[in-house]
Image 1 (cartoon, rainbow, N blue to C red):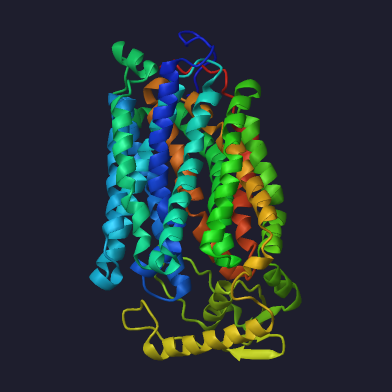
Image 2 (image 1 turned 60 degrees about the vertical axis):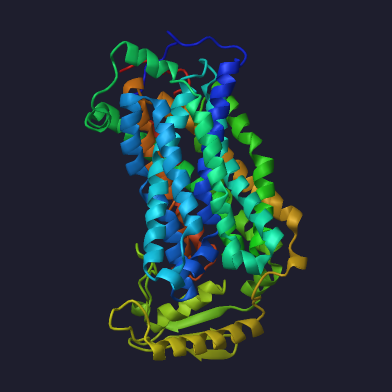
Amino acid sequence: MATSPGTANLPAGGGITPEERKVIFASSLGTIFEWYDFYLYGSLAPIIAKQFFIGDPTTTFIFALLAFAAGFIVRPFGALVFGRLGDMIGRKYTFLITILIMGASTFIVGLLPGHEQIGIAAPIILVSLRILQGLALGGEYGGAATYVAEHAPHGKRGSFTSWIQTTATLGLFLSLLVILGTRTAIGEKEFAAWGWRVPFLVSVLLLGVSVWIRLSMNESPAFAKMKAEGKTSKAPLSEAFGQWRNLKVVVLALIGLTMGQAVVWYTGQFYALFFMTQVLKIDGATSNILTAISLALATPFFIFFGKLSDSIGRKWIILGGCVIAAATYFPLFGALTHYGNPALETALKNSPVVVVADQTSCHFQFNLTGQKKFPSSCDIATSMLTQASVNYTTQEAPAGSVAKIKVGDKEITSFNATMTPDGLNFDKASKDAEAALKKEVAAAIKGAGYPAKADDTQINKPMMVVILFILVLYVTMVYGPIAAMLVEMFPTRIRYTSMSLPYHIGNGWFGGLLPTISFALVAFKGDIYYGLWYPIVIALITAVIGALFVRETKDNDIYAHD
């Protein structure tokens, strides 16, 4: 259960010693490199989708996002495996294992042949490598946060661990810089063909530096003291999750903290990027530059909110970030559209589109494999409109009728597709009909004023940076203090295991699946902003549960064994 307040046996406060500075630097730098490896895929998902997956653009993109999410889905299992090792044999050695798995998996992605060369083996191997990355990351974060917190003086754990919290953003920032540098050096055409592999391959250099740094680190004093006293846990999993007094704290940590923190984090740093590239049709280079600038401006606030949590507590900063984010997402993303693609905003207001269809034939276009095709005339129509960033309303049609798309005074008839015998794709006649329909729809929406892509001269880049900065500022509020709070909620002997699981379920499942779920919600509802309801609802649930049931932890004694 949560440790009891106190300060016995804790290091004294004061200035940071050289050893403490080394602990923060070594843990943070190694973790930055791991996040760099992990985020490369997310940043390059549209390009990788064309290399490794086949199918229509909507299905391909969803499958690519799911391959990205695969690394998140397995993170809780990595937390269990490496958390158990960390509580039994020590924090330091798990670092070496996780960094080696992460680095090797990333390097291999850079060498992996595409679908044209090795067929179905390409996406299978890619997803397998993503799973290995997820397992490694599942063990990484809990170890880094625990290691730094157990070195921190009492009253400075928020400050010390907030440096770990910057690593995810800095890792994303580093990945964007390498991608932009490569793109600029060789050009967009060559980058899409083969240059995307370069950021994956250069990660082997980061791997070498990370391993060298981690070999020089010592075990944490809290674990070393506990081990010397013979009080380490022989069964961390059963102690952490088999006893209700600890399990209920794990559940509260998930629902009342990390679940909301995760969706705020991924909305600010990932969904905003996907929104710019996939919905607003802003080119990838511009979107990455705008995101990188906002990250650079906001990153110091991780440290600010970490330090602030040492003074006023961690709970209300985290929950406050959830509430503010939930209250402002709709106007902020509306502002992104206004300043990023004003022509799209005008078309959405002045050129309404209607899908007339039998509503029983309209489905929620989401599945765990990302490979399922939706052959009904309604699903084909709504998928095309979503891909083109067109809002639409629906109108009931007679049962069994074929869906129609109304754009102004034009009416376009969709079609019901026929599947191939394996049930995985449309047959040739249906593919031809799909291509013809797509061409007709594209001409109609272009005539109604919907832009095929954002006009770079119309993008108000300073205002875009301001909005993105605000979104990342919310991330710093919820994420800056979270490591210290999770560490303080659990006793030393099972801390690594206990804190890692709720963190990675929250961030791996609720956060990692956010882009895919939000994309499917938009296709289902016909509103480019409808996907925001997912993070808003989750953040508000966390705010309520956290306010009612989660206790403040900043004064807890993290040296307590039980």
